[in-house]
Length: 225
Image 1 (tube, rainbow, N blue to C red):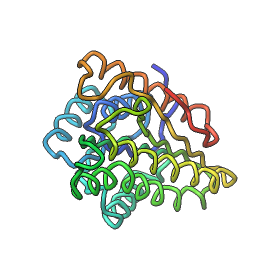
Image 2 (image 1 turned 30 degrees about the vertical axis):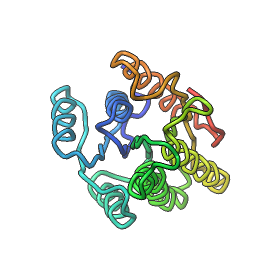
Image 3 (image 1 turned 45 degrees about the vertical axis):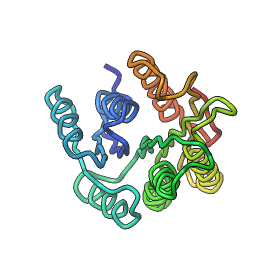
Image 4 (image 1 turned 90 degrees about the vertical axis):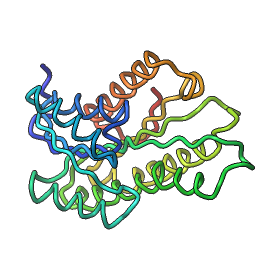
C-alpha cells in the first residue's frame, strides 16, 4: 500500500458524504492520521468504527462547521492532541434545489453556510497555522453543474463563491510554502438524478483528484475532475 502521507495529520469536513468518506479512507490508508468532521453524529460514528476496524487511524468530531469559533476550537484540539495539521480538505456539500425566484431565505443561507462559510472557516484556521510553519496543503472540493442547469442557483452560487475565496487564498499563501488547490469536478447530470453507481464513480474520481493535488503540491490553479 502507498504510504505517501505517512505520519501526516489531516482534517476532512463533510466526512460522511460520498466524497468525504472516500477521501477520509484514502488518506488514512496512505498513512495519514485523519480527523473526520461531520454534523451527522450517528453516520460519523459508523464511518469511524468501520475504518478503525480496518486498522486505520481515524477519529471523528461532530462539529458545526458553519461556526468560525467551533472550527477554530476543532483545529486547536487536533493540533494539541494529534499534531500540527498538514492537510485540510473541504469536502462538505449541501444541495438545496429550487428556482432562483422560489428559493427561501433559509435555502440561500444554508447553502452558503455549508458550501462557502465552512470553506472559509477551515481554510483560515488551517492556513493561519500552516503559514508560520512554511508547509501544508488545503484542498477545496467545489463541484459545479452543467451551464444553465435550472433549479440549482443557490448551490452553484455558493460553490462559485468558495472557489473564488480558495483561489484568492492560494494567491496569498503559496509563496509561504502552503499549497491551496480547488478541485472543480462537473457533474454530468443533475445530482438528484444520478444513480448510486454514478455517485460512487464521481466520488472515486474526485478523491483521485484530491490525492493528486496533495501528492504533487498543486500551486492553487483550479483543477477539473
